[in-house]
Length: 229
View (cartoon, rainbow, N blue to C red):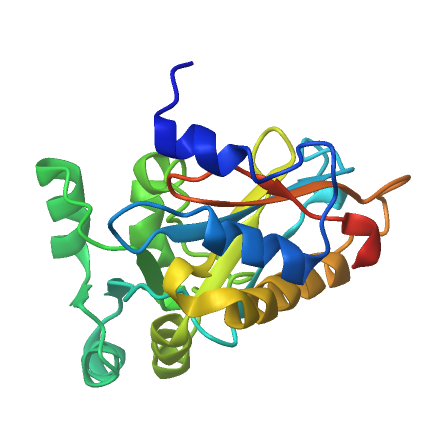
């Protein structure tokens, strides 16, 4: 795979065989991010679980101490007073069947998070095949199926992120922007890792944190010492 000179120069500053302490890893990510835009910093954690088993699922959500640096666009499925409440709380889009049809007919996806009141899940369920693969399906575990739409919207706007396993037992999660600097990124990293460790299924055996890497949008990956967490 061809890599540009900037990437190659950045990669030379990282020892691929070394496992860095979290603060050290964040400092390296910031230092090796050379793009002209404010790069997103992502965390990739491989867990020693098997996502095919229901008792080994790892999923949840947490409000990061310093947010993600991105303003999330929120779509809320609600009706009546709850729809009015969602609008007042700052939801970007609110609706019922009209939103379902817009997504189905227009292939519309100008939103980042979906919230629904429990009574709307029958309607939202029709979108399972399109929202599911994109990781947008609301769920009680992530706090996105709730009657308290105000709280859900406020948390999302404040920097709430959802973490969940993919088919290869890896969690991918944004933890901020390069402009946050080392300290804020480290605090966000510690918060999300703390939540993932706390969510360890009792059925999980052996090493739980198999590997842990942080990476900026255009930069090389930096391996973090999972044993130190």
